Length: 115
Length: 112
Image 1: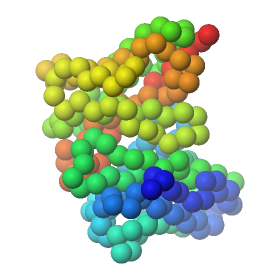
Image 2: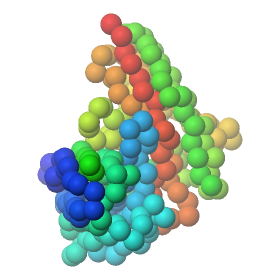
Image 3: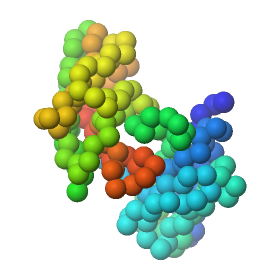
């Protein structure tokens, strides 16, 4: 197992376009998280899945953002009608239900630039 | 609300010891985690303290005092590769399943 994988690593898009990011968690992990990180800041929570159920969404996640985790495996995060303020690093993390609640395994992220 | 405070920058020389402090305010507490992030890289878990005291993992140690809502990360025998950002994090007690709240991060620069 190679850890949490995110694709693409970089995405440049024009304002108003839709973008979709993919996250493949560690295979035996049933918990999956999306965070957003801007320069000089810590990661900010966006949403959380346990298996295929989306159990928590941040108020940061406007109606332009949607996340799915069909079949409880990989997850996708879609941003519709992108805005310049959406430019950030989007991080995915996973953990196991039985694991320590303080330990999450992060992917390298997708860096989004909205022009 | 939940918040964490840590210094924004720390500079030290190779071979030295550095301590990165973190104070937190939470309505409930399940432990303090530390993550390391190199430029352009993924945050990587370093250490977790659920109880008071010191946890040691090689050159890195982490300390927690729940009565003071305070913890620190101690890095010994600093190496150039330790130059990175270090984040403390707590679990949001209002959310089942481990949503983490991160501090703003401390950028550590190790000089030769």
